[in-house]
Length: 149
Image 1 (cartoon, rainbow, N blue to C red):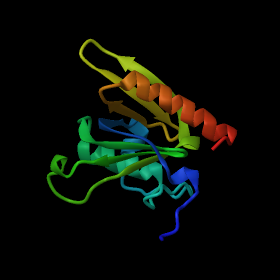
Image 2 (image 1 turned 90 degrees about the vertical axis):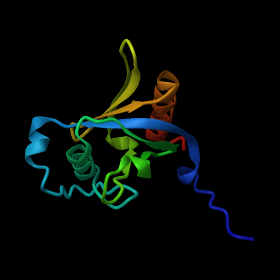
Image 3 (image 1 turned 90 degrees about the horizontal axis):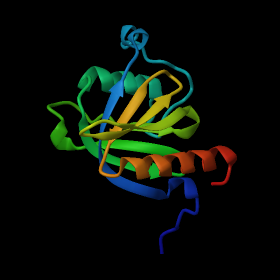
Image 4 (image 1 turned 180 degrees about the vertical axis):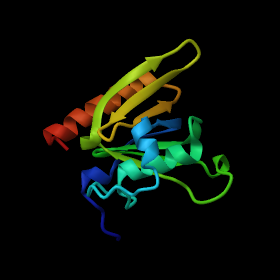
């Protein structure tokens, strides 16, 4: 029988289809060719700030369809292969210590979850149950910061 990992940080707490958009500040756009080495490598091996700049440079202010996975210490986004014209997939993995705030942004025809990152980026997630996702995110982030996981 294969070993079972009891590390709860790797367990999926939630998973759903969503669209993602990254908004960058003007200062970040100027430095998009540089790879920040701030020691905050994501589970995919790159720093989050560099990954978000790369994602923004590649997709701009377009909604990118994919799947989000909520874990005890990370929110991961995996774009769908059909959304890509060419090149490799750009995964985004946000560790919760890097999250500044989470809020729901309601517009007339869409509701999105906005997540501010300590690097200054804002990630927007559009899904069917944005309010419920925001509530789960706030709960899991609070639990991970208190060390309850």
